[in-house]
Image 1 (cartoon, rainbow over the protein chains, first blue to last red):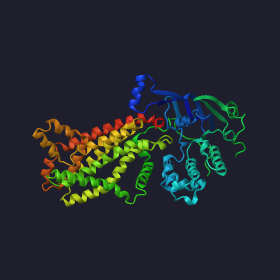
Image 2 (image 1 turned 90 degrees about the vertical axis):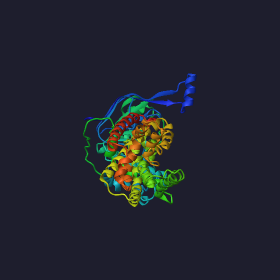
Image 3 (image 1 turned 135 degrees about the horizontal axis):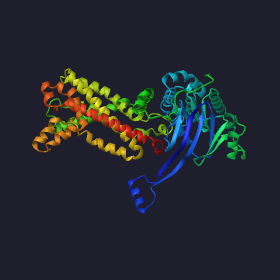
Length: 250
Length: 299
């Protein structure tokens, strides 16, 4: 087996400017106050993901999960260390980010597919699957602005999940919608896993994580706090102690 | 859907996304095409006059120049005054539209840039292509107008026109790329670009002919090197090349007009300007690539 994601000593620092204008900056400088604060969203994180592996990324809100996903998808570059990947990456991060409310569902499927890196032929080949999956049937030629938020989210998810890529970065909060749709999303993710694609799954839901992944990473304030079997990760997070609000789902 | 059970991507490990720069934009031209189509489709949606708005503005400007500058201030005392203005306006349109729109394009598309990995140069490039799309009908109007004024086919002129268009396009893209990236960090940039664009109309031989610059030097109103400085402006060079294509061939004595109304070494200057513009484009692209690394966190 060979790795498909290598994260090697990665640090990502954000600088927050407390001033926006030149005047404010000068005033703060004169008073001797700090103008730029920086904090480390990700600090010296290293791990490999094997080709075809499904791995969960867990951690509390604000622990750096989204930043790590953006580093792996290439939206952000690390300040230190390196991120290497093999194969095409589908980042299910900003689903429907490219949707334009004034364009029809059909036009948006093509636009969003192209944004995610699909070719025209690839979108044509997947088009009916995408539409079936999103269940937008008769609204296909309606402007997306008239869709309900659930429909928009379903369409966004449907496009991204039908990319024929090698690595899927999936944020669980995106498996949106009602219970039947959520179930369908998980089934599709499971199919992708069985097809041997690498899956990087961000979730709080212990049931789903246990179902989909064997290995989990836990981020704690930007540092890699745990890397190992899912059950131990859940125990590490003390998620097993609480009553899971999503228990019994799926 | 079924796929083979074993799914092994080939190829070496590499940093995700990569930064192929402008080349990457053209590799993903399907995306560029769809974004362009969206831009054109969406811009005038819900407007009664629609795309025609793109022509109302230049038209109003044209008549303003024509009446105020030409007739009231008496600048129209040279041959084919109206054609001279309009030819200048058509080629300059690339530069009056692209830098403004391109500078704002990165910030405007932040929802995409912060979430999806795609070549970010796509947005400034698409600003250029939107402007280019809009000048196609203007070119047709210009051609009809030139024919009415007695234009005749002149292969050298056509070459000059093409060179002028390419030069203007490269300059516009350079500015759009550089300031588009800078605008992410300093939103002052867009105001700066808007302010600079006020000068542009007056810095090229459009409302007045080049001859005016020469005569101002002779009168002593400009220093001797004023003409050379004026001609160093690549925008002026691009407009002159375009005038060589549309305006001088319409003159009664076109050979004399081409000789007397154009600076010496017009083509040499054109190619040198294009070379310089390409170097600047390369530098702008490099700067863009460097700044791009922090787009996602700064937007």
